[in-house]
Length: 419
Image 1 (cartoon, rainbow, N blue to C red):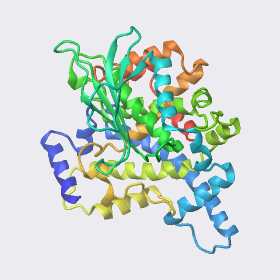
Image 2 (image 1 turned 180 degrees about the vertical axis):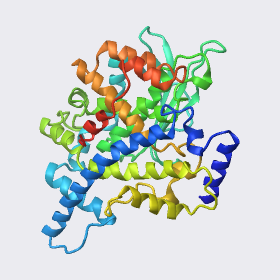
Image 3 (image 1 turned 90 degrees about the horizontal axis):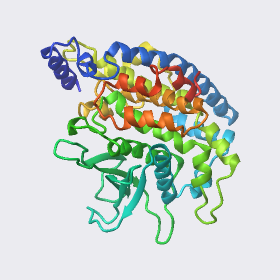
């Protein structure tokens, strides 16, 4: 870790930048590490205050059970889950029967149709790389094919863990109109023979999230492959995917597609209400553990001449400086912080998830303010300036063209219940 940080700082100096963070953010939406830090610090104070309130509630729960110990990081999730269950009475086993994989795929396709006029026609005549993979021709509003979409949903021994979107071929117009081939990969548990694959709510969100990335590739309409689809700034690339998740939670989507896999009964309204209330539960903790890691990442890469830096000691000092609550550990402690140490993808850029969430929270509020979450005019601007534009315009200009103004950080606080 020490060598990595030192060499990154040296690289930045050779390129004329005062620190690696300045080098990395020069072509990002934030543009400067100072702007990214301002965002993180504006979120940190209300998140920390909420996390301390949550800690007091969990400490009271421990005392109510007769415990005489102080809440620590290894206790948090256990007691938070007990409190969530008591407050909202949501059990994954109660919810899963209403979230079969096939219905969630259909829901993701339906939202894309209502927003962007896309139709998905399954292809069974294409030899794919594995029997589990499925393919759909994506048809645009004019009835013409615009992409091939591949879904690879089930876990298997030969498969990398996690979930992601990738492209086998990027859209371009250099050599005629080249249609993109876009793939979504997930690792859902395969059901037994003759049984439906049932998803948890987080898994359903993962499906919508990765499909939001897929749409960024599918709808791409640029000349150069280097600018196509998701080839955008790190702090902008998560905006289309995180924004798309909002439509899963909408009652319009849940009522139409969240149906019991055996009876066809619609998900109960009371369960939808509890689900929405529960999504704001424990958000102080979630925001603090993430923001702490992002702050350490940024401060670490702001060191202009780190020398033989002890990264673990640096992290300890930074967490103390920001007042990290004792009962919460950062989401990624330095030795397993793969986002910033396994490559350059998110080094000095871990903040970008939170930056993108401000965009998605503020962006979806535009649809809510219109009174129609499928508002055609807004959807058309979203497609033109975000999903189709790739990296053909500056991300801040792209967002303003869609929203009509710059994003407001308070939207994230409202989304997470921290306002």
